[in-house]
Length: 434
Ligand code: ADP
Image (cartoon, rainbow, N blue to C red; front, side, top):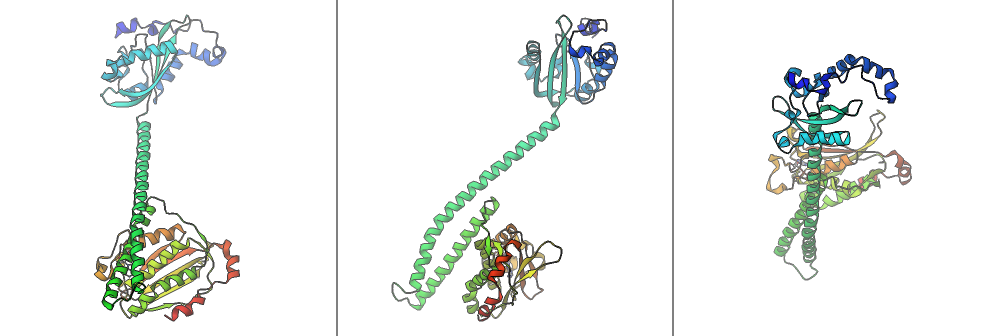
């Protein structure tokens, strides 16, 4: 090592303070003077840098100086490493292709070499290094060695790699979601078209348009109709779920009279409640403001809640629907609260949240007369939340269940509301007649 230091031009005093300095702008500053005459200060400064390995190589690539940062990053002390060839930091495969030597050649020819590449620590472990090599020349332009600055970018690279990996995973799952949604959209179209023909054909037969139908034939046709309706609803729910998960559910809100949507849902279940002798009542409501809603989607929520209420309420039970305007005085604005209560089989307290999970059906409800997909409430929650509202279920301790959802009032539409004067009360009379 002593030999090496002797033939090292850097350690031969070529950097000494009596060497004439180049007439460069910095040479005229006090900083240059300090560096020139205060070589010791400059050396101390470099030596004490912790975050960068800063060291010198002689023209042949042997290490001539070492700082704290170099020790911290690479693990060698100055005594261990000075005099060694800098290729010690390279992986064998890099040495095999002459990479260290080529770096010095490029730095010499181009005045600078920079790269990011794995390097080895003393313990053989790898780190991701950013390396800058700059040739150092004396006053005559003779190459006296190289300044090498190395940064350990392992953590930054790991974070970058993770970000890339995350982005790739998101992109892959997004494109898989889009593909799934497109597939389901195509499939559901393929399934719904013949299903519509079956439904229309069944309706024609039941209306006896092609000719008279016997009672037993009518019964069979009734079964065909109810099963095809169920199938139609299941296909639509699966398609909605996949749109929901792919973030492709689209909403087109317009100023809407919620009372008329409630009325329509009540009409939908009217026949079946009559058949089941379930009493359907609506509470008198004050005038409802116009709401900014996607009519079709909110109708779907109401249909689901009322459909469930009918499904889970035995003969002779009661279903009630109310809609009221609420304001908690916190200045957060007003909202409309819709409540659908039934006197049916109820929901176990520990399941009031779980029933909003996709495909969840209460184990106690999986009777053959109450079959469904377990998707309706998951979709309802997505729809209500997309409108800025909330939806939840309440367990009424053996007295049935209540589903509540809220929708914010868009105060901008209230002038229109005044004009139209929509009230839920206007349909209460009709609904009560059921
Ligand atoms: P589906 O009705 O098709 O099964 P939903 O998502 O609409 O799917 O409902 C999920 C589950 O929540 C139902 O299977 C049932 O267990 C429970 N549930 C929903 N509505 C009621 C209700 N009115 N009374 C009792 N249980 C209900």
